Image 1 (spheres, rainbow over the protein chains, first blue to last red):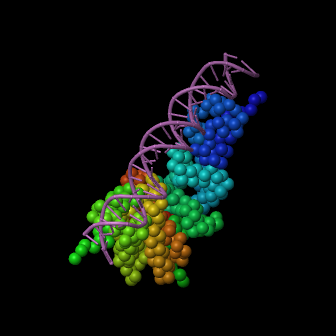
Image 2 (cartoon, chains in turn green, red, cyan, orange):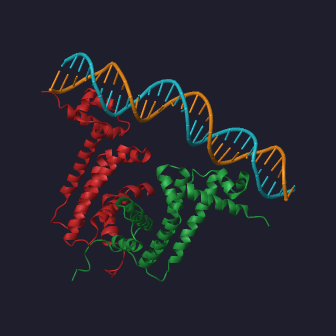
Image 3 (tube, each protein chain N blue to C red):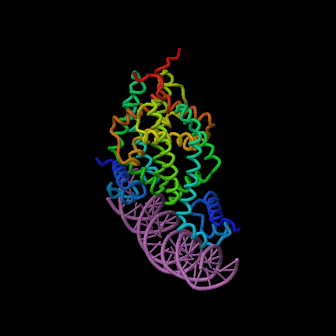
Amino acid sequence: MSIDRRAEVVQAAARSFALFGYKATTMDQVAKIARVGKGTIYTFFDNKEQLFEEIMNAFVEEIVQLAEKAVDPAKPFAENLHRALLDVLNFRREHELFTRLSLEMKEIGTAAAGFGIRMMEEALLEFVARHVEDAVAKGEIKPCDPQLTAYVLVKLFITLVVDWPSVSGRPFQEEDVMRLFELYFLDGISQKSGSPL
Amino acid sequence: MSIDRRAEVVQAAARSFALFGYKATTMDQVAKIARVGKGTIYTFFDNKEQLFEEIMNAFVEEIVQLAEKAVDPAKPFAENLHRALLDVLNFRREHELFTRLSLEMKEIGTAAAGFGIRMMEEALLEFVARHVEDAVAKGEIKPCDPQLTAYVLVKLFITLVVDWPSVSGRPFQEEDVMRLFELYFLDGISQKSGSPL
DNA sequence: TCTCTGACTAAAAATCTATTTTGGTCATTT
DNA sequence: AAATGACCAAAATAGATTTTTAGTCAGAGA
């Protein structure tokens, strides 16, 4: 039985994309790493972008499934959000493809890298929006536009996990992020209800 | 009495920066618009960047003063935030220097434009952080890191006023921004206290 | 026959070179 | 003493040339 050349190609490409980014990954290189002829790649994928898309798709699916698994419909929104964010956080830390692509996207303006990022963000937004909608329906959170709320939520997440650490120098611990999320998003910073004894 | 050449230079440069951006503004052009010799500019400013800095400084000062005027120490934090943000919002809409520089910063990577933007953001952050500190001291909002809170607040502001409109296509009205700010930041989206009668 | 390959090609990217533009200077004028 | 614009070096731009790379295809190997 011959090896699964398609899988070899995908694995090699995934490694190369994660290691060098989209632009610096050449098809010759992928072929070499996968130990196949370059033409073989083109029997499975029409072009470089499609190969990239496949890998991003798998990546996105993995993340969404992870988040989905963290959600228990019986449990409250805040708790589900908590667990899902934690998982995404950890996943990000382990797989640096996302981080590298973000960099490439911002430093160089690679179109495909931008596409990849946008795809991930859109998938994440869709996922969050769906759960926000549920939570609103259940009366767990106030009525609001699910799309916008998801957008704000994800932006706040990125602000806390990516932007602020790079501005202030010190990254947060997981628990910090969760506590801050509750403070800034779920409960609000306004000191109005529970008067301090 | 001779004209104030320095003021002429500053005015000409301000116009040109706002109209063409940092990079596309040449010192020859500024000299011509200001109707002075190019050398004259260099009797007031060491170089192009310093000229730019002066103009940005004035700009930032104007904004901060505007915001400061909107704040009444006797009034609650939420209301002050409300008014200050409204003023900044309007100012932004009127003066396009900020917008143009943001674009230049993102499309081309002009270092000086980046510097200008960062300056504005830092000034704004400092302003907000100071007032957050006050509000915490007065017990109007929950105890929190003023720096971080200011950062989150400004980011949310930009998310609502700049990012979301460009994503969704439809910009917000002023009142919308304010209402959303209350929902997402001050009160929180969590449906916990006031049960919906 | 069918899968797989790597030399090949056209197009894009990088490199090099010639030319122009531009920030900054300074001897001269006012 | 204040102001100027011709001047210069350095940087940006444009164009020509070379290199790299995505994608093809005739043919080798099974």
